[in-house]
Image (tube, rainbow, N blue to C red; front, top):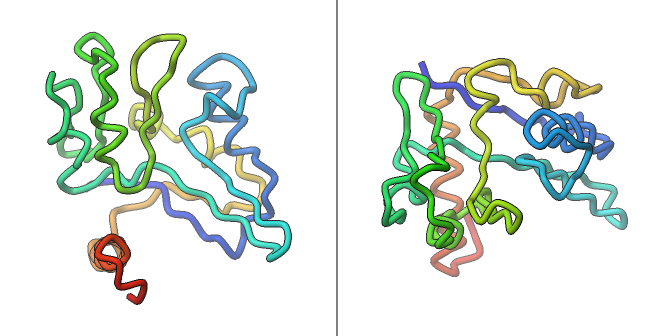
Length: 159
């Protein structure tokens, strides 16, 4: 069964521990600029929004890659970037509707969440409020999110 990181925004306090744990695990340093999970803080509204790769059923990034450097591995459902095949063209960056793939200038390649290679993700392990959990995929919820994204893309601004 496919896994994904479930986020409960009402529990998030905007501490950014998830970003630090992720960057340390994947880049060896506490550098939010090198994280694969993002925690946006909206101070005026007192809201915190955390986002990471949705490990899409049909990844747009995979379809867009001209070098077949992105693939979805089954049965885990994890979408991986093969750094040996990636040429850094950034087509996948443009294709991701969630903005969850980023280009790393220091490597000339792209990077995205891979659920810590199917281990317990560091962001989940170190989240002090447990707003992040590694969970089984929820197909109805995924479909609801995709309907919302497509509605917003179509410019209807209502879901």
